[in-house]
Length: 149
Image 1 (cartoon, rainbow, N blue to C red):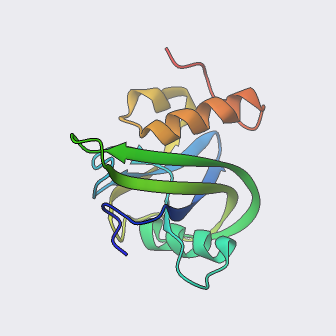
Image 2: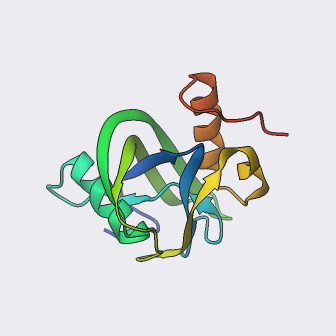
């Protein structure tokens, strides 16, 4: 099944890695949201445990090893084309993850990756999912995220 114009929603997993009041983000190198900064993650593979998928995706996109914790939240992204057909539909599960080892370096379909300071994060071109994630992190007291201006 292709990712574009899928027959069913596609399950994705992401890693929320917070270190020294910075959030690990990747600059998307492919649609949807090409050029925008998002949580490292991607599609779950058939037969893969969701936490193993987070470990794999963070390593592929950022080159670091992580220890995956609890599920933080789930999101969905639905993108319609000009005719109203569903072009993309993802159900995304974001897990907290702790940086265990390695230095970040972009890989896979990531054009770049960086630990972005939370106090300047809104100056980046963020995916809608990251904007919602930041709001939820702030509202739940899970990270010192400022209000978006």
